[in-house]
Length: 129
Image (tube, rainbow, N blue to C red):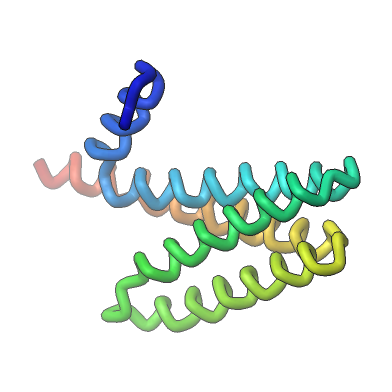
């Protein structure tokens, strides 16, 4: 049950977001969770590391579920996402932040690419009107 105004705001934001905005939110979430997970490794707080690296894996699984397999790039993205999950598992098991940091870099690059693509789509849509 949603009780706080902030939770209501978040729910409204999710319900009114475009598909491109939702995708960027997923990337933002995964990035945030990996940063918190690597912070947990640094602090030797392995519960924090485990919780957040598992949350990042769940977000990447959502990215996999959102793939549209009508496009050839989906196969490549699927493989990249699977590799990211593998690396996060390795990072979590070994309590080594290097694999998670690699995933973080990939996610930030992909997020930037999707952000630029969404800006391009928005400007094209505005010109068509």
